[in-house]
Structure formats: structure tokens, C-alpha cells
Amino acid sequence: MPQSTACFQPTQAALAPRPAQAPRLRLNASFGWQSWEGDRWWRTMRGQVPELAALGITHIWLPPPSASVSTQGYLPGQLYMLNSRYGTGAELRALCADLLKAGVRPVADIVINHRCADAQDESGTWNIYRDMVPHPGKSIAWGRWAIAGSDRQFGGQGSPDSGEDYGPAPDLDHTNPEVRDSLVDWLNYLRLSVGFEGWRFDFVKASSGEYVERTVGPDAFCVGELFLDLKWSNSFLEYGQEAARGQFQDWLRAARHCCLFDFLTKGQLQEAAKHHEYDRLRDGQGRAPGLLGARPEHSVTFVDNHDTGSSQQHWPFPRGFLGLGYAYILTHPGMPCIFHEHLQDSGLRQAITELVALRKRAGIRSDSKLEILCAERDIYVARCNGNVVLKLGPRFDMGGLVPKAAEGWRLVQSGNDYAVWEKAA
Figure 1 (spheres, rainbow, N blue to C red):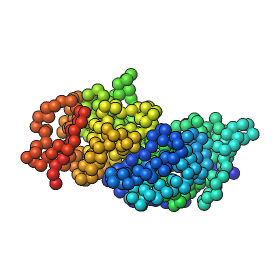
Figure 2: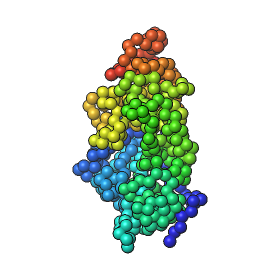
Figure 3: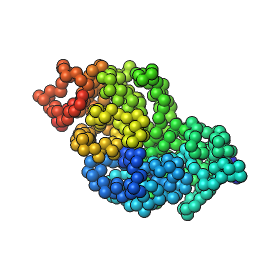
Figure 4: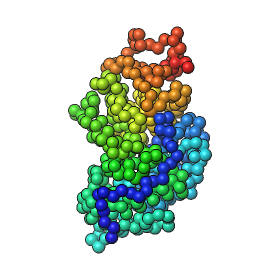
């Protein structure tokens, strides 16, 4: 029976996709919580590939690829079984091929913190894993030794969990070389056999950044979901959130080549819009809030996704300010992620399309220079890359901060509480 070892170093990280060109990355979150309905999402997305490529999307985040106990894919079991509620394995491969041909890189939603078992042991506990699909690489037929020892609910016999307990499914022991090598083989399979060229890691709150770094290697595009508890006073989100920002940076110091979804920036931005608290958008050092201000090249900014918005509505951006949200993330540093349900909304599609085109024309990158010119309760003004200005808030009078036509500036978009100017090249 394989034994775990805390000092294990994998013999080979997952084969790296082509260079991700992350500084100019524009990600599309391609699915909502109910996108599995109809068992045809892969086919639906194939029909939208030309539109996404024309928009300028560089990467597209697809739902979990494997068969799952839950319809959405987040309780995977047989990792190599690619027939899921989103469609068949053949349809998934065809979608990836179409995306790559169009110059858009598919990003797989990777759920490896936990894995649902296939059978019960002699005590009736679900902790016996089978390997039911022929595939190259190591077997995924595991036993209790593959489960974190701290996961007593499932009789784990491995090392203690490296992160937070998940609960609904057995947490895997990522220090175990047999488990880690098997998962690396699976990622290589997704790259070589299916066509994925990047990874989105689910629930990294339960996994150390070091393990993610060892698994994916230095050259793959990789983004993690680290959804932390922020500091609130009743219903008031505290300014700053330095403790959470520190936790984000600690995780990234271990997963040096990974990025994180910037939940901190999302929180401050939506509270600023809802309550006219635009002074939230500049920290004590004159930087943007959240990970965007501290590590913009590792910040994947977003307005909503399948968890925060969609049918779940766990933490939705205020509906009346969605245009403002996209104006912010698409005119600022970081790597913007566009939620597919918003892109398909006829009331938002044109605004998002124009903002993406502006970002491309202006050459805004994840590491572009950001100058916050004003951040007061009722107004925010920032200049990015020297050639784009964004104004947020209800205050009409910008004083001397109004971009001047005589200096080459022109208004390119405006909406509820926001306006965007571009300077001619």
C-alpha cells in the first residue's frame, strides 16, 4: 500500500501549455450554475467560438470535464470519464479543437482537493476508488491511504489535510506520491488528449499553494479560487482588508506561478458602487484595493461568476452597476474575466464588447501603470497606461480632472455612474 511522505517532490509536473501571454490575457467564464441542463453545453459553446474569438477573448474557462456526483461537476469521481452533464467526451474534444483553431485557449476547471469514491469499505464508508476507464499513466484505483488522515468522516489514513476540510467528499492526501503522480498524469492527459491549455483550480482554500505549484509547474496558465472570509461589521464591509490581502499574497508566495481570482477587489468595488463609497478604491499607499493593488500581474479581476451570480446569487454585483464593474476591470491592470451570462445579456453585450476593444487598442496589460487621481466618497478618477481615464461616481463636477479634447482625449463610453475616455495615439 503506498505511503505518504511530506517531503515528496514530483518527478514531473504537468506538461506546460504554450506560453500563456498572461499580461494581455482576457478570460471568459463560460458557464453558469445551470449550464449543465440539456446535456449539450459543449455543443452550445462550439456555436459561440467565432463570437468569442472576434471579441478578443484569449482564454476560456470551461466547467469541470469529468463525470461527477453533482450535476455541475464539482464532486468528481471517475476523472477519466469525460461524459458529463455538459455533453460527451467527443463533444468536449471537438470544442477544444475549435477553440484552439480560433486562437482561444481552453482552461479546465480542476477539482483535485477531493474525489468521490466508487464503493464502500467493510464499515459502509465511501472510500474505495476504482479505475473504470482505460488511460495512460498511473492508476486512480485508490483506497483509504489516498484520503487525508484528518478526514475522519471518510476513514482517511494519509497525512493531515494541507488546508480546510471540504466535507461533502473525501479530501485527498496531496503529500502522497501515488496520488500526486496520478493527478499529474491526469492533467497531462487533459492537455495531450483533450486539448486544454490552462487550469482553474477549485477551492484552493483547502490546498496549500506549494502543492499547486509542484503540480502544474512554472509555465502553465493557472488561476486559483481562494474565497476567504472578509472582515465585516454587521452588513458593512470594512475598508482595507489587509489581513485577507496578506493571505492572498502568502498563498501566491508558495504558488509562485499561479494567479488568483481577486475576490477582494470585487468586494470593494461592488460596495463602492452600492453605497457611493468610492474612497474604498484607493488604499493607504495610493494603490488599488485587493490583490490588484499589491500583485496586479497575479490578479484575475471579475464582476461575477457561476457562484457569486448566476442562479446561486451568493454574492452578486449590484445589477444596476454591472456596466460600471466592467468599465473598472477592463480599464485597469490585472487580468479581466468576463462572465458569459453577462456577455450574452443584450443590455451589456455592446458595452463589454466596446470596452474589450478599447483595452486592446490602448494596450492595457496586467502590469500597466495605474494612477489614481482622485478617490472620494462620490467620485473616483484613475488613468491607466497613460491613455485611458475612468471616472466613477455620481459627482458631475470633475474640476481639473476632466480629460481635455484639446489634448487628444475623447469620451468613448458612459453609463450609470461611470465614464471612460481614450487618448489618441
